[in-house]
Length: 493
Image 1 (tube, one colour):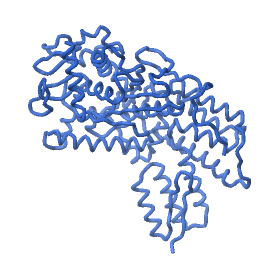
Image 2: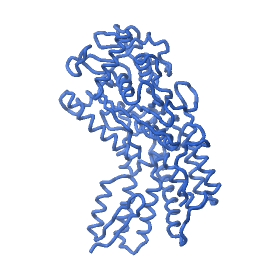
Image 3: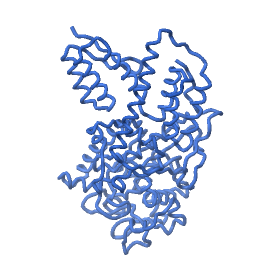
Image 4: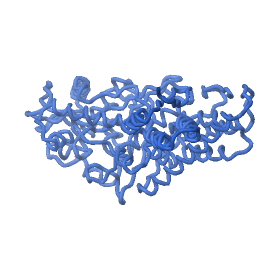
């Protein structure tokens, strides 16, 4: 097979440009520390199952990470887990989402119950992330494990006379931050902050909410941290006062992210919280944002039940810019599923033809076609994550008769470091499964192999294990190969 340098960060590599919400423009990326990137992503509030609209944010975050690692950067990635303090609005109004979950599930109103529920839905989030081939973050800090850090930051703001006390809690005084709201505002955002006659300004927000029945004891009263202060405290602990990239959905811009910026910069003597702010657009469902609050949401398990691979959903997301709203429909996902399957089939055929070739492939210098495809791919993904062009380039490559099969495989393997579609893995399994289906095996076993291959592609491990047992009961042993090994089947006895 052709070899090439996996480290794309060299003098000939184009610069990485990102659309920065803070600067309202696409900007060249310059890291705080050379060769390293610190990233913070607003994580899930773990009071219910994650829906595929939520998960778009993490496919987006994963793509950013993959692009930087593809370019040779070392990434420190933090995805927080909100298990306390997030009210049903993004401001200071409504019911606490975690207490809502406790009531829904009929549990005792205790911090222990809250954490029990959080742990369960956190595991659901991680499972859905695995289904989408999202790389594990460096750290997944839980908000409830960082009360000490919240209290320290709030105390600093009080000492600086930037936070003040009311009968409801401790509030941040937005009038003390001249550029408050610099990330961007939306019309009517004041209604999201809520009205409180004790607040000095209508945009002031809670950094601590009093609750004498349930919560944590602090020098300024029992209660819970505000949702915004949690992110500021956790990002500072794991990434420092200033870091490179902060992401989230576009709904976070007017309130949550503006509030994070304000309190962090005031607590840290004006140091910028993050140099680059990036936001993904919504997944639209029946004309509105997909959301748990309205009951209009679809989970990864829902897709599986309908025979749609989670990686087909990832493929669909990558065919659009992260900043573009996507209209959800099962028809669109089914079309994406067919395209993804066609992609796997095409590469599977190339792998099989290479395996069937009588002459052994030897290392050789990469062709100009190879170099051009690799150069174009780097240009696309480094240009504000232009994955639609990267996907189109991949299809052009597969149709290009000027590029040899082994070069195509090497390029697809390289591209998939960013796309994260597990293309070579599943194409390889399909190629081996196809050989087995063509082998001298009973039709019953061939059908079981084919069904099991589909279950593995969909990451339906329970079904895959069940089919393995059925194959064993029929007198055959099936062994799944590792990274460089093939699927094997042998007759028992």
